[in-house]
Image (tube, rainbow, N blue to C red; front, top):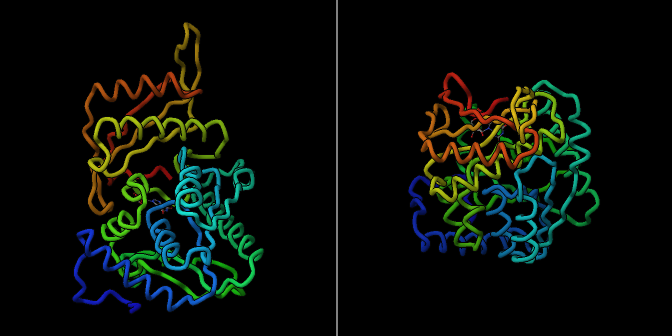
Length: 327
Ligand code: XMP
């Protein structure tokens, strides 16, 4: 049975058994809906699209075509994880598109945050549509819409981002197997479908990716400094059991240099800002209280391991007045 809306009496999926029952029901419904046709899915590696991919692979196997667009603004190791999990472990029909140069060339010299967002979103649709046009016989478009997306768009809080902006001649029928689920339910379902914890429990990551954490005009060297410092921060948070306790944590590298000393020589380099917040609904947020020793250790690692960075700062600003992201 495919529900268009979450039934009022639907039991919250909180256990593996309930997740298994949901998966079984959905797989049956998906097979009925899709038949022997093909489904296309933009697979970012985020929780929602990953769970949809895993569900569709189980339901229709090679009839699902996943497209992973690497726009160069993903975190360290993310494209590799998508390939490893979906192509190597789940045997998915996965098209990997290396669009790094294309995105970064378009973004070169662009400083305005909203223009950056528009370029990233617009280019994504274009790359995805180009890939779709190369394929024959696609009738369905898989989407990671979840129940809060529907509620928020109904309440006018945000435009429903899915189905977003594909050219009009591409009128695929939608397949939205997690549409009636809340986020915590999507995670349990993902876990039961065999996705790794690192994918299912990962922290929120904005669509424009590291692009909004490299304020102003993105350059490849500063973007790399964001990526590397973020990887160190995530590694240290994982090692120190802070994953899941701090809601969101990341680094930002603004286009600002200050004087420092490295290897006894003057080093005029960027500073790296660490942001770590606690929240329940992201409308407001407080700053995480982190152990001093850990901050000293993270600072030491980032300043010594990441080229171009000689200082690390901690952002003590709650939301409001600061937003979570910098752009
Ligand atoms: P702000 O910066 O608005 O962030 O306080 C609130 C939450 O939303 C995420 N965020 C985004 N997510 N596209 C997204 O998919 C975006 O453009 C975007 N901007 C912010 C942010 O990471 C935080 O979790």
